[in-house]
Image 1 (cartoon, rainbow, N blue to C red):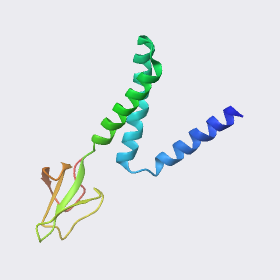
Image 2: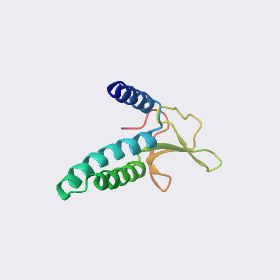
Image 3: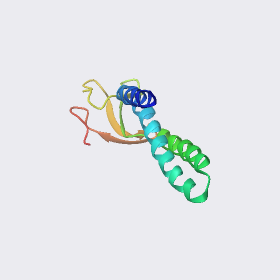
Length: 115
């Protein structure tokens, strides 16, 4: 019975990850990797559960903070909007790519931005 519950939990977890936003998925992956590293470090120092907990929290926070580059465009009113990188913005005044609105690099608005 325990094996069935464990397999069902893994299936639900993996199915849920496919529909998660990128930031939540990065946090979950970071927490998993952090828990693994924390377990390895904690087992050598004799406190496995504390290592898992500290590693999971640290990895989750780091995974949540790290963001991939996003695409932004500035409309004719001067407003900057984050958009999907696959969108074509024909009427945009300027298009940018970067990690945050304060750290942008201008790109052409006519096609997909360079990867």
